[in-house]
Amino acid sequence: MVNGKFKIITAMLIFGSIGAFVKNINLSSSEIALLRGVIGSLFLICVILFGRRKPSFKSLKQNLVLLILSGSAIGFNWILLFQSYKYTTISNATLSYYFAPIFVIVLAPLVLKEKLTPVKVGCIVTAMIGLFLVVNIGVGGTSSSTNNIVGILYGLSAAVLYASVILMNKFIRNLEGFETTLVQLIVAAIVLSPYVFIKDHMDFSGLNSPASIINILILGIIHTGIAYFLYFISVKELNGQTIAVLSYIDPISAVIIAAVFLGETMSFMQMIGGSLILCATFLSERLGRADLKQCSDRGGYSG
Image 1 (cartoon, rainbow, N blue to C red):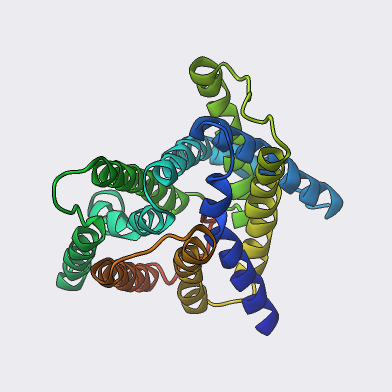
Image 2 (image 1 turned 60 degrees about the vertical axis):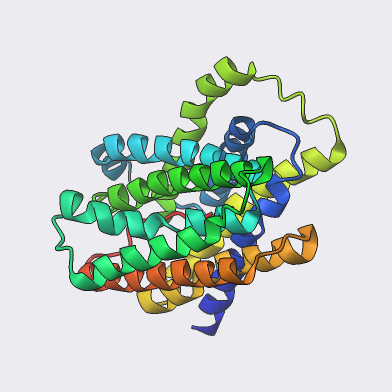
């Protein structure tokens, strides 16, 4: 149990530092997303080969449509999240991105036929109030406040795609989370390739400095390959409630890292708003786990 907690805490701390590294990569968001998918996939393939893990090709075939759709959503989710980092602070981007469980609550009655209870409605309202406080538009409609709103909208759009991945993963059968995520990363890289070729001509001219190259390798190997590996290893050793609680190290560490290393600050009202969002999403995840307590973990995705 202790070993499992150490692994997931490490994974969450790694996920929490993604924004700080992305901000120091001189590439477009789509180029960063593509390279992350390629490098992360190659790392996890090596893990499978060296670990002599044999994926179930029959199960992969049975879930192929869902894997393609969810993998595509992950790829474009990354682009939107990285765009959010470019327009607003890491803190605001991360908190808006953590709206995903709220979107799951909103969509669950349609997709999973779950009942929308008064407590769940309360989670939605609380999160909306928190988001209003985080946006903190300010007076005068300055360029900075406009960029802040655009960045948060990108973060919320990424959260919608993240929520769609969460919902699609619940319909995937007979695949471990590790296998699911590996295929999704491969699909993300494949789907993003033509998009990056059309949009950015696949030249990666921004990789003209050692810093950018090192940061993209760290993003692909550590933030994707190693972090996902640690996450799925720990999932087998911990119960759902412990995982839900420890997963909040991700957004909290992201805010702290942004403040310490990038000098980003949050006003008191924004901190209150962030706390409301995290409390609402935490409660919504607890409710989701209660509704699905008899379902096995079929793969997940963070960061």
